[in-house]
Length: 80
Image (cartoon, rainbow, N blue to C red; front, side, top):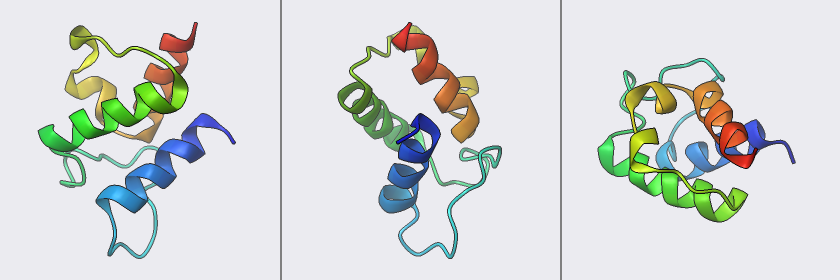
């Protein structure tokens, strides 16, 4: 399964239980209130376990968690 799809499914199931449709890859997760600071830390834990990566404190900035596309880019960068 591709990275973006895995992340989208996690965000949808964990943070959008009542939503009619999953967020698009470029929809703002922060501005929409889907993700807050606690949600980001839960998402980071999921990413580290699922993709066997390490997300450092310096990586936990709004630009990396703005949308699914940004999160996918972060994961790919940490895999290399």
